[in-house]
Image 1 (cartoon, rainbow, N blue to C red):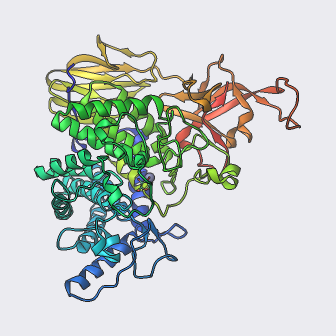
Image 2 (cartoon, rainbow, N blue to C red):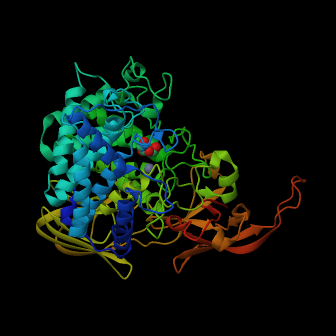
Length: 635
Ligand code: FUB
Ligand code: ZN
């Protein structure tokens, strides 16, 4: 295999999902999340924190119109990350500085959803928001409601803390998706006008700055792919190459929060090409690494690819939770040091796992190795799914692996850990991110290149590949692959990391975690022999020594108080007995200690009695009211 054995994921247009499990979730997003968010963006949900999203766009349009008529414009400060009813005037911008991005993410989710389920009413709602967005854009292409409303003279003066380039990124991603879904280019033109302004503003002999929250690199690349306009690619590369150079660009700005000369938080402490490990704010990190992977692939840039490899290795082997969560510390919503993966203090933001999936897909397109899709599966079936309640109306931002509701209430170090999903967040980055990922799941199943079709996820679906049709379905506990190709083609079937023993009804060769075989008109039976397992974490992770977790296929399981009573720390699992799958639960033999009556005593084994532990999939936790939860249990 050479280093650049590229493949490309199949586009959403060419993949139809027919999977009972996933279809119910995709439909939940369509029927509950998308309509709910539509209302939340207009602050029409009783009891939910206000978003101010649409209100800000309307205010921006009014300010723009006043500017056009030469009327005097009142300005307001742009000195905060968050503006609420108390710390700002009524006519000023409200909410988080990145509030615009929630509308863009909603439109992106709608765009994918429309390709799965055409819906003219939903399309009209998206068009209604698109009109509101486009009406707020200034003549020169600028579009960020915070600065338009509060003080346009300060635009692009605080790249480190403010999110103009971030909001642009989400605008561009939404615009490309909406155009692909509907052929309507109104938002695409708006995104291109803003992109043109950005290309004119930043670069050699222009402002040598770069975004504080990465995404515009990835988005400019997407815009380049959609339009063929080369300056978008050049500017994305400029941002990556400029980042972290000394003297630091951020030192020339007056940031809201002074970080001294420590720009790890923004992955800007050294140039990305010199970075070897994942640091700083986790979502920012994985969005940057995704763009680096895009450009490494597009430009066949071996240096950038080597950097991505090293950062990937650091995340996968030292900084990722068993649930595919990343960002172990609330302090900066950030990656912590190697092997620091506390269960009860975890940040593990839903958006960070979504970003990890973006990074993984790009890495998987550059290398013939199943490990990237293993991570996609881990993050998808656990942290991402856990991010949304089964009602589709409540969400987790933070995804801990151990929860004690009392600690969340009483211990300020754990205030970020919510024992139940929230209706909506003022800082609502995660729910719309989740909606756009789930609605575009079609694009994570198959890849193709000049001689191979890759089957990366076991999601029942039919696909149109360049060689012919393919169908993956499930029958009697086995997967069936039906191929109808015009000529013999290589299939690379990912053998998941959790599968110890599999059977295929044909001969194959194992290459980097894929079973590879030729096929043309074929019916292939795949038996992955899924069974509940007891697994453990490296003993380098202090939080998990002497503990184990229970899994079934891609699902990580957990214990909840609702099934096991309180004081989950009193439980231990008997690893000599096989756990058993039982009506969606996994039961395992174990023990419960009898609570001690004193705080200290001479050492004696605590008294314990036999009990049966009842585990549920991690993604389902927190759907039965407030209660204790843990993934790892003592052995
Ligand atoms: O800054 C925008 C988004 O808000 C980040 O991606 C999230 O981590 C949250 O801080
Ligand atoms: Zn988020």
